[in-house]
Image 1 (tube, helix red, strand yellow):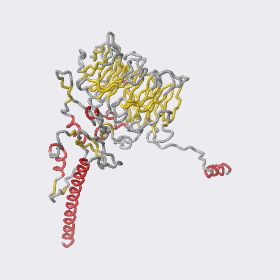
Image 2 (spheres, rainbow, N blue to C red):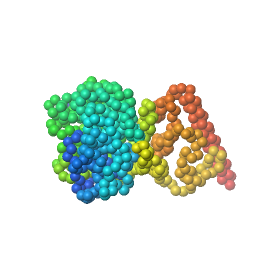
Image 3 (cartoon, rainbow, N blue to C red):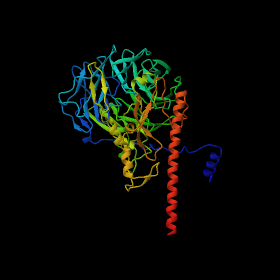
Image 4 (cartoon, one colour):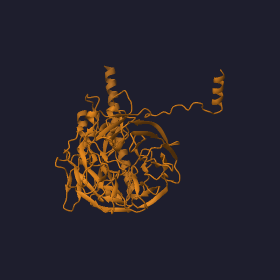
Length: 570
């Protein structure tokens, strides 16, 4: 009785005795390493001391930097070829120095970029059947501008043919890869750059460097928007944007060499929103952010643990969930894009771990425990599609767009294939031969009721369900009379359907027009007379369509009433 009285008094005074349990869909996420027969063995992993991952993966290929003599090379293995890799397996060799970093193009699963200690960046086209047994020595583009070795490269998340590179000359170059020219040079660092990260729409860059300063940079103007003192330790620190939340996540070391993480606001880097110590190990920590689940995975080079946290939009900003611990240290980690995951197993993240003590690459899946094997829409929101939202010229003119999204229900395991055409001027052109048909196939939903259902069109005539399904398969731009020559066809998601379904949206841009995507919670305000006229015509067309649908509905109601009266009289 005394205990109950004390408990009631505590609640009456506004004191909560029990903290309770925070509600989250990802509290029980666990790591599931692949079986031995699903791993990649006999991989001669590089011993380079650079602070990069040495591994890149997409739904088609796995690329691993290897230890070679007299230059640099890497394996490119099709994902389905598990098991032991032959000693004479073909490699991609072309650099005269060790390869420091690899990145697959987010919009072409056959193009990979590599940087090296030989001060060059090379772009390679990998055929669908993989690297031939004799190896590959000829790249289709070499980017030469850095004066010292190149340490990191990063593709633009929304614009095609834009690549950022970081060198030991303290410079960041923004490349236009279809022409091989430098379009912007960022020269604001006074010491070695440790990491680089684009935000979700690619309008900002965040960097950490040896001078312990965390910077947020506008890549188009090459200006530092915000800067502040980051982690005060002497070892390398890393940074990643937390999607479009306006916050950054960094890992580094304290003055006393304790490993720590911190959350920052990109608008004020004078002090962190939160900073926590982890342990006293010496390995550099790498953050990996999943925007779909709002989770951050922190893995240390040289140790065998992977910690994962959940990010929220209010203090304390980040919650620790759990960690995956093994006795085998890792040299690097590759991350599979979300469209390459297995939705039937409720897989939300997948690492490809390069072991430091043995020649092995081991897939590790992060899984949400669910009893059902059906598609779980609450843990799989629309994710990044392998389609650029902008061309490189549009981005260079200052236009911004959010990334194109695709439903995981229809777009899981989506792959792209864009053949590369070699021109005499050493430039490349991407030809989308099968991409449109592939996305049409991915956008088709399963029809539950296969019985023929009559539909009424605007003229009152009935249309059979089979005819309706045939009309959906037609390309929308074949019967669109308003299609203009300068319009760009991209893929987007129609979010107002009962089921997620991929659609095809044509955005028409003018030269002096800043195009912005319309969101459900935003109100579009025309900026000039042309936009106002276009909005008026669009609204008029929609109103006319609604009126026709309403008239068809009224005719159908009258027909049903007459039919009911006839049946009643009989």
